[in-house]
Structures are given as C-alpha cells and as structure tokens.
Image 1 (cartoon, helix red, strand yellow):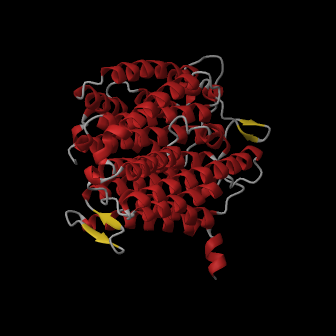
Image 2 (image 1 turned 90 degrees about the vertical axis):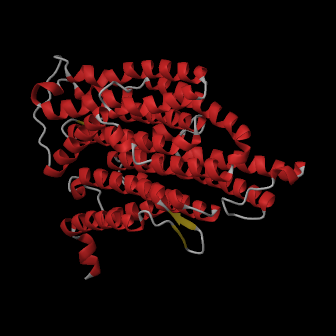
Length: 448
C-alpha cells in the first residue's frame, strides 16, 4: 500500500504542498513568544520565524512550477518531495541554530539532499558530473567548516554561539584559535552561498542540475546560507568584527567583480544566472559591512526580491525550453527566447520584469534591495564599496538585457507556449510581488 502511495503522482504533489503550507502557518504560533528548544540548541524568535517563512514560501513557489514532475520522464516524485522537505528541515536549522553542532547538522541535511537532487536525471551526463563535483567540493567545504568549529571550541570550550566573552583575558594562543575558527567557518559558509572565490562549483551545478532544482538552490539555499552567516557574525563574532570585516570586504569585492564580469561572456541562460547569483551574493555580503542592526532587515528584503525574480526567470526558462530541443534535451541558451514576444506576451512580460528586478531597475523590488544595501554602506562612509557596487550594477544591465533583446527580435518566432494553471499562477504572483514591492517597499521592510 505504501509503495502504491509513493508512486501516485497526483496524490503526492498536493499533499506535499499542503504540509508545507501547514508548516508555514504553524511557524507563526511562536510569534512574539521567543524560546529555546532541544536543550537550548534551537532558538525561535520573530526573526527566525520570518526567515523560515521565506524559505518555505520559496520552496512552495518552486515546487508549484514542477506540476508534480508530470513532464519529467526521469521523475520519482515521492523521493524528490521527501528530499526537498528534508532539505527544508536543514535550512530551518541553519536559520534558528543556537549551537554550532546544530548549524553543522543543518548544513549536512541540506547538502546531502541537494547532492542527490543535482544528479537526479541519470540520463544527463552533465548532471552526473555536476553532482559529483558538487559532492566532492561540498565535502571539502564541510571539512573546513568543521575544522573552524573545532578551533572555536578549542578557544571557548563551548559550541554555544553566545560563548565568546572575556577577550581581554585571552592569551595570544587562545585568540589565534578564535581567529582561525572564524576564518574557516566563514569559508565553509560562503561556499554554500557561492561567494567568490568559493564559487567554482556554481556554474557547472546550475547548468547540470534539472532546472527546477537549480531554482531551488538559487533561492532557498542562498537565503538560509546568508541568515546563518549573519547570525554567526552578529552574535558569535560580534566582538572581533574588526577581524572578520576584512574577510567579508574581500569576499564582497571578489563576488561583485567575478560574478558580473564573467556573466557577460555566457551564452547559456543557466550559467548566466549562476554568475548572476555570485554577484548577488556579493551584494548581500555588502549588507554585513554596514550597520549590523539593520543588516537583518536588508537581507530579508533582498532575499524576497531576489527569490521572486529568480523563480520567475527560471519558470519562464522551464516553460520555453520544453518547446525547443537540442539532441533530445531542452535548449537552454540565451537565444532560446528569440521571437518570444510575438505570441507569448505573458511569458515575455514575466521575463522582462524579473530581469529588470535582478538588474536593479527602479519600480521593481530589486531596485530597493540594492538601495537598502547601498544606504547601509554609505551610512558607514564606505564610498569605495558603493562606487564598485554601482559600476558592477551597470555591467549587470548589459547581460540581463541580452535575453530581453532576443525576446523582441524579429529574427525568429517562437510558437505559442501553453502553460499549466499552477505555473501561470506562480509566474503572475512573482511578477505582481516584484512590482508591488518596487512601489511599496516599506510594507515588507517594516517587519524589522
């Protein structure tokens, strides 16, 4: 009976969405009632509830695009939904951890599920290669993170993120352990959000993985990763901010430059989005260089804006690529959208607005996301970072407008693309959300 249930695609899809919506609603039971759980290893407060809601909502949006994996010949829906929901457990642990062991467990639960999902299409050689590369590099990053946690424990004698105290009483050896621990933990965490120079896995994994799972990685994983970084810097290493600030500044500059400059040369839409993701990691890291008290709200708004635009962009790619095959597989190069505007007005509008938001054009949510980041940096007087970010944003306009130019090209005409009801709903909701947040940003900003 259980096997039959697992194979029933029509039943697994709505039940998975139902339980994720249920988890989303039940999360607000603890609103304004902060507390610790599992022997003080998890902390639940309003901030963690909001970010948990963002990752769960992002997962729902992405899964609704899949339509129960009906069009995937290689699909094993029960297993995929189980892995996705397990990965969500990992993201919530990364968002709410109070103990570094819980952070490590959350990352591992998330990562193992993603390794399997990346290589889920066994017929795709690139997907298999991407899964192996992701697994090997992820294992090294996990080892580096674990070494950093061990150094922190050697310095403080505790895994609690509030354990750092009495720095003036520490000797040079203990401070050395602490600095090493901070450095290695940041390396492990920034790998998960594909920040340069720990980004080498992202382009191949984004391109090789099935598009639906690429969208999941680009949104859910990135949000959880940045919350984990913010939490460890604002709480655990707050007293040594002069040390880690330099590391974050270097990672920010490298991510902005490498992500944007390299994206210009890409002819694959998914690889372009991968390098775009690296550049957005730089913008989100920049939020940590400003006022840490406001960084939480900035990361929250940027995550929502980035998620809405990214889900919409990948949703259009999924819909259009099915209608143009190359060697029996979906065609995913940027010129795929040639002539899209003639008979596919909805898809064109969704794609244009999503790319305008990612590039930070006014009246979109992406504009305010970057504006809040720039304001925080400017308030601290770091104008060099501000100038660099503006220049890189200008470069991003070039490669984001390439797909848009193909849409309105008269060189070819793409036949009418028929959308599933849930796909059309998600694309419209993401587009409306992007526009509304572009006009009324304080609606979301006022939460923090």
